[in-house]
Each structure stands twice: as structure tokens, then as C-alpha cells.
Image 1: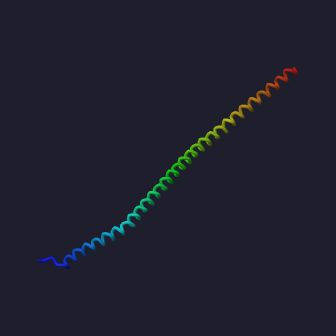
Image 2: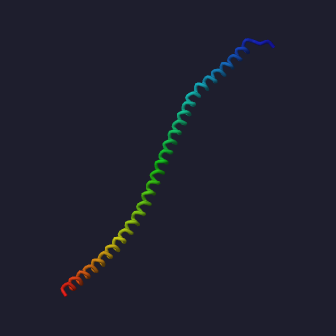
Length: 112
């Protein structure tokens, strides 16, 4: 069979459609690739922000735990200090009573 002109035109036309579709796919893939790249950059930014927030919250939690521990320790120390001060004041009062008694005895012995 002889190759007719219409067969050659069909081969060229088929190739032209293939070329057209390939160029259309390439043209449409560029915005798709750019959109995908934009989405990846956005997702990375979101992850960086979330990681930063998590680190900040963990730091704040650690700080609050430390302050709570210090507050409990300080409250215990204040309570102990108040009890110690009460004991010291009571002892000082006893000593003062004894000193007054000695002074009284000394005055009485001088008067005699």
C-alpha cells in the first residue's frame, strides 16, 4: 500500500495533538507546582510557629513550676521562722522575768 497524503497528515495531526496536550500539561503544571511550593512554605512556617509556641509554653510551665516550688518552700520557711520567733520571744520574756526578779532581790539585799 502506498502512503497517501492523508496518512501523513494524520500522523502529523496526531503528533500535533500530542504536542498540544503536552504543552497544555506543562502550562498547567507550573501553577500546580508553584501552588504546591507555596503550600509547603506555608506548612513549614506554621510548624515553625507551633514549635516556637510549644517551646515558649514549656518555658512558661517550667517557670511556673519553679515559682510554685519556691512559694511552697518559702511558705514553709516563713511558718518555721514565725514559730522560732515565738519561741525566742517566749524565752526572752522568761529571761526578763528572771532579771526583774534578780534586780528585786538585789534591791532588797541592799536595803537590808
